[in-house]
Image (cartoon, rainbow, N blue to C red):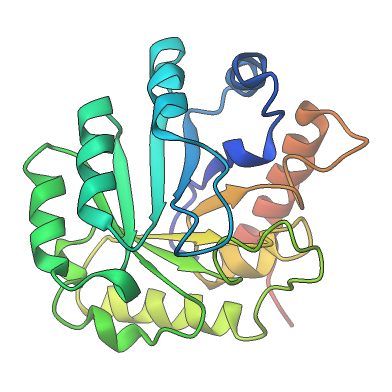
Amino acid sequence: MQKDNITIAPSIMCADLCNLEESVREIEREGLETLHIDIIDGSYSPSMPLGIETVKQLRKITDMNFDVHIMSTNNEYFIQEMLNIGVQQISFHEETSTHIDRFIQLIKKHDTKVGLALNPATPLTVLDYVLPQCDTVLLMLINPGFATDKNEKQVSYAVKKVEDLYRLIKEKGLETSIEVDGRVSLETIPSLVRAGADTLVAGSTSLFLPNESLAENKRVMEAAILEGLYKEVN
């Protein structure tokens, strides 16, 4: 594994949505610096956890890095709204983008990091020409927007896809980040990190596991990360 610096990005939609400010304060107290924010339009997938106005209010109360994942059939509208708010990274989906290069340039000209998100079954070949322009590739490991379906499991080829992307990035001599999202659990973290993932979207199967404190879940997550970084597989 190439990187010791693994980012834990708490998914705010998995926090207490009735007490968002306190949820953010608790995350800050644990020293986490990145907040993963899903923007879903209800059309791309059947979920709408946070609205634009909510993100605006969150921006006022914290200096955390906002890592925004847009799941929409109208990417340009939401990209512009997030740029107006002032977020640090925006990922949008290849599958709903006719003008990928235009969106990349729109984000970059605002000095914001750009990520391209791929659904589980989307092949890495769609990255052939745009990978050098991406700061991040966000690999969905479940179908986006269906996280509330507890029967939705991580795809069986999750680790292989991370390995293949890591190999592609290194072959091109790039330093593109690999972000993974979807059932990034305490059980799957070691293998995902070992495969090359360096940003973990932490949700209901890791940082926000019920019956344990955020601090305890973070401690166990960090142990799983270390296992992935340093434990050899026989």
